[in-house]
Image 1 (spheres, rainbow over the protein chains, first blue to last red):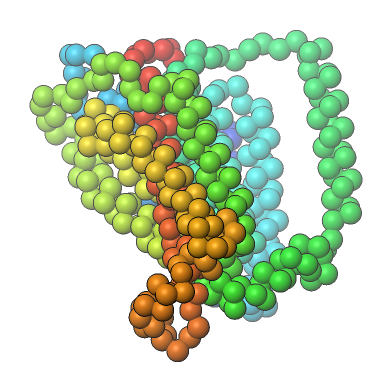
Image 2 (image 1 turned 120 degrees about the vertical axis):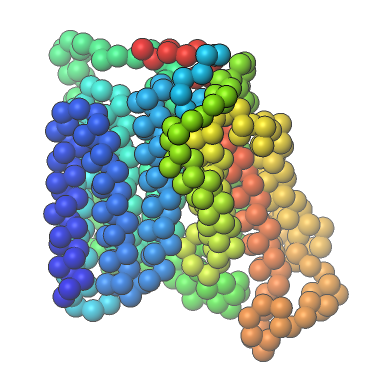
Length: 95
Length: 354
């Protein structure tokens, strides 16, 4: 019952994230919503795994947690530098 | 599954499908490419959870790593390369496509009424070949994960085709964008200062973990969800994260373009090589029962894997192991090549998107 309530709460939170991502208004809102949705989904997968007696689903949750981090870095780098290839750090003089 | 779990699953199916519809409509409506990419990433996330609710763990794994991870990064690289903005449409031009889409969509909805019931044991997917796979896998192949048995052994030839398709896609991207960066990559700044020190440390911590997890997914693939395709993409994420944080120049110094290219080829070669060895030993192409001649198979100690008294199919075990390794090499190297192509080109023409 507790797990079912957890699922319901996560679904409500996911709906709010998706609403924010669709409405915007700025791209930063959308990025934050996408990142936060990823976190909710990691939790949701874990809860589903225990609810349906398949703890092996945690593997997929771990993949999400790792991949979501990389995606967020790629997006922030896109906003900040407009290229994927330059190293992070202060603006270098060469090009 | 308990009663409450079934009810939760039913509710989740409805909630997730509604979310997918909402995100899909938003993708169609938005005029910003970046917003579309973000929403597509969210669509992948939601659809992967839906696949998990449907108990298709292997597919959900693939959707998670490809849809939510790699494709977002590659699409970001793509919009850096194109000079695209919203186009003002004349509504008359949209009539014919709209009629076509509504017609095809209506036909599909009509076709849904002819589908068998959800979970119907008598439906064609559950009755004939799928059923015999489920019954025979433990006797003929001996791996716990039936998905891996079907993918790697029963349908090994199809999977070889898929691996070659991935390889060909990588070649196609490389022919358009180059196998790697063409010209001057930005150097690492001389003094990094305190900028992004948290990111650097986290990335250094995560890159080996991601690679380790990829190998776990690879070697655990015949026991649980996962396999060569998923592991290959996860493995490719590690150098991509390195390139994002420490710059493409450093990544290419560690993983040279030429090496990545040859690894992609070696994967396909390893896969088809296993098939040829089976043919030489008297079986069909990719018939792993003939992977080892009986004299070699007799030399394998009985307690090498699992319980010694259980009947083992060493040919099947090692055949699946080697072809999954080939898939891993090809997929990982192809993904890295694609990333090199996109990221390297963006470095060549800075500010092309603005």
